[in-house]
Length: 249
Ligand SMILES: C[S@@+](CC[C@H](N)C(=O)[O-])C[C@H]1O[C@@H](n2cnc3c(N)ncnc32)[C@H](O)[C@@H]1O
Image (cartoon, rainbow, N blue to C red; front, side, top):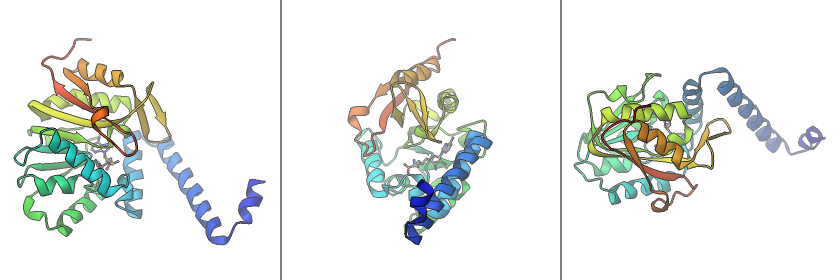
């Protein structure tokens, strides 16, 4: 019945629907047959080929400016050092690079294609003399080893934990101590849900308390910034700060 209706649609719409369904099946197969991070990287790469702005979520100007204004309102200064964790094609990154003193911006990502687009953006915007550090994380077992030996005043992860399952999120808190300066702030957005849940191929929902427990276990306190961040798609914001000592299991 559905096939009959579809076959009667005008050719361009028919072609578009077929392409969307084929792509959707290809993406689902990718996540079913590959480890999560490799699938997510390959999926992002596919999307960058299509459109480098849409690949990392779109709403380019709005979410770039939103996160930048939030960080400045919450203490980011020109001479602060910032790690943009999961920097993508620099939706927030361009704002940070323009603002920060040269060399004080570091962006890391797992996708080489995303980073190639990011480097292109830096050049197109005349920002090479700001000397941003744009670094590929190639290590499937570590979140922050790619910046080993460096510590930052601020770390921001906008729309990153939204796409990471619980074991990856726990790894972030395990390694965070090495890359956050004493007194430093790790701000991150996440999808807030009543229970831990995976929706579709790459959206993960967390109760605030689940994240707070994970953070506490590894020595961090978590503060709820939901009411202080007006994300247009409803992502929540939280702040993790080092509290002194990890809790023994
Ligand atoms: C939705 S995009 C957001 C990009 C950017 N933060 C922004 O606001 O535009 C998420 C990015 O995080 C990257 N990412 C996901 N997991 C990562 C990890 N473990 N380490 C580094 N980057 C990661 C993805 O490759 C993707 O480019």
